[in-house]
Length: 177
Image 1 (cartoon, rainbow, N blue to C red):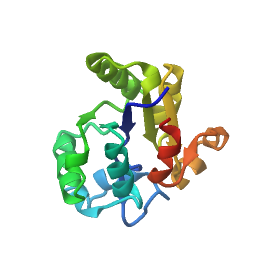
Image 2 (image 1 turned 180 degrees about the vertical axis):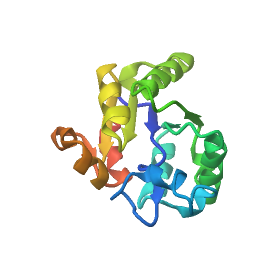
Image 3 (image 1 turned 90 degrees about the vertical axis):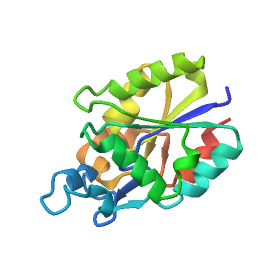
Image 4 (image 1 turned 60 degrees about the vertical axis):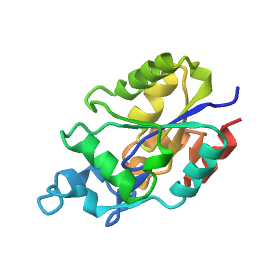
């Protein structure tokens, strides 16, 4: 069934710290004493993101960001980053969820689908974190793609077994139909 909605992880998928890219846990920018006061300053858009989002919108796909960082300022930071990278107008919704519960993203996806009257088969989740963006989402019957991350590969060998993996967001287009 053709996908009508794509859920996207934010940090590590749409953007990451420019100093470490996807070679280290991207959450370090929220904890480091030199970067934690203004972590968005240290982010850069992942290559290929903007053209992919533009193409998905032209295809009529609804785009929803679901980020698992619960810092109070993170939802504001999401909006600032989307505006900074000039993708704000391409995103239909954005949400933050807790990261302690690994299934929080999957639960939020189900909630959004129900609210919009869409089926699980019409949805696709794209993210770099095996447990939150892939495993729990797939267990709930929602299609998912793992965005390549050197950090995740090194930390969790299970990621190597995932067949649906991409290195550039433009490659998500082959999973839409």
